[in-house]
Length: 451
Image 1 (tube, rainbow, N blue to C red):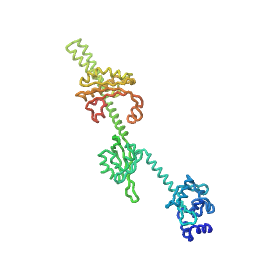
Image 2: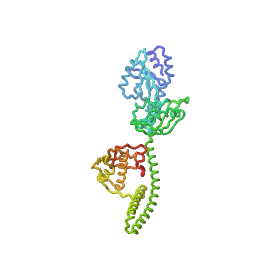
Image 3: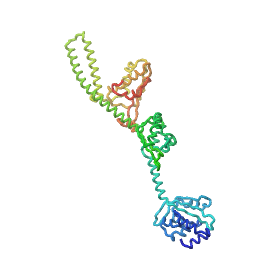
Image 4: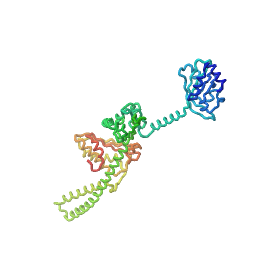
């Protein structure tokens, strides 16, 4: 710094200014003295020259505005002019224009110099490049945590939730305000909530835990989640927060159950097919001998009725083997275009006799439903089975309702029923007012030969 400039500052600020200059020169950040009337630089310490890359003669007496980029210059100057009203000074986030057009993000702190002959202020500049980098990294990390597909939750050592991401909220169906501050165990079934406090939380604090849990959504629906926990520790190795990562595996569990069911049905089908095939061969021989016996008796009426009963029993056995072969996919299915409503109407006369007078049969048939391609015998058999089961569930009487409806199944439905293609379908609904079924029976209702 030139002696003439230093003397000028001393004359305008304080007669004994040497200690002040020593402080500014050893100050760890860039420091300047600015004439607020002209915004010119009266003084700058060596750190500012090092930061900006400019020489002393390129800075002193020049406007400070030449060295900064301000988002709104008029607002900036207005605040600077009112600096005397700010006892604690002002601070701004700006950009410093350095030598060779380099730019640096900075924090600028401004403080009016009291008891001076001139309108001077201290400007302190802190290089915020590292701070901005850390802030960007923090924002990126926060964004990543919020957007990650897995549900993510942070809770304290007591299990109180302090952070959750969007996937966590989507999994449980809650808003953020309904979750923060609640105990993590409250989002699981009551028994598991108790188990969480008793075993899962202590295991998490000791190193981590993972496993499947039954959780309850806000809408009351039970879901299955796979949760893995780990602990964040401080510098002393003490746990401070627990991180929980959750995946909704409800669909996965359903698909697993469907796979096991299809594998079981395939095994049963193979067994049934083999038995039916061999049994059908035996029935063919029996039928042949019955016909041969009938021809040998020459119309002997004393045994003719017995032969007819044998013939009918054999025919029913043949029909049963056909069903077995159909189930095992060895029997050729013969689909045809049928009118669902017409078929139901034709069956209604027989159904009234089948269900009895104590049960009222109601049909709500949508006349706009499409025709469908299906094996008519199988369709009638399925419908009859449902109606017989409904009748047996209403020993004291009730209502039996058969409905048809045109529906559209979308990709969301396909997620839970992979064998179904999205598109238009005809829905046939059979409802009764009977005693109902247990959940176990519901799971097996469409298994062949299960009653």
